Image (cartoon, rainbow, N blue to C red; front, top):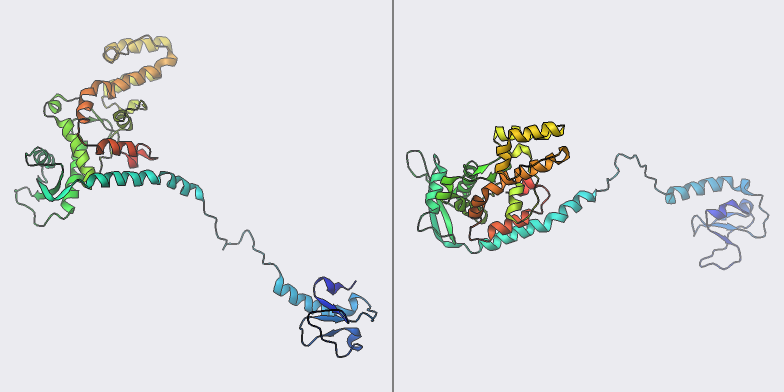
Length: 346
């Protein structure tokens, strides 16, 4: 068989073809001629005895080279530096998974903010030297209304008002400073990034816990920051959840922390009982004084921490939750499902 049949179309003479031109000279070029009307078409004479592929070596090499140049596949090396990387959709899926929660939180806050009457204002005269005092006086003023917008004027140390109108900047600055001062109030304890409420008789008498809850609500609704410092376990408790993962590091009292660490490090039942006996008053106050085996020591620590963080501070927590506004509970519920608690939580 003629080798060019695998690579080039051919038209046997005197056979049907959509377009056929009779060759000028059937005896020239050993019976093979290139049609002038149909380039790259080889016309073969059925009556001629061809010698084989060697007789068409020149035609084959030139035509085949042209064919491969035009129709050869494009080969892309896997190691090509210009290779376009395939995007990893894992991270995109992870971010999309939590996107509805973020949108929902924003919508809830926006809907609550619709209740603000921007034609009425509650005035706050804030001294930079004592932001907390000015905030307390503003919230406790008889003319203060939760449905009114907030108008803030800052004063210097001499009591002179700073020039300029409050178009939103002073209000946001005030709310930011307020959340910073709130974190350092004696009603909170624990590490700076994991604070929880603690009982304070003066704060109870002055109803500061209720006021703190109101401040958080106002800051969120009026475009200020949420206090990014509350403990996850404390927020879970506010939401009615039983999840509790507090560690010994959350106890700021050095003596109590030392006692709990000794319980953790006790390697024998005898040494463990000695530690419990040494700090029996501490465990008895928490209601968890009992005979404990070595494998039960972590449960003893958790029981004490639950009482220390939550149980002994119930009066403060209940006062904090008296805020007559759905924003606090709804916002806490929304942020609870986020991935990164330190970024998304209070």
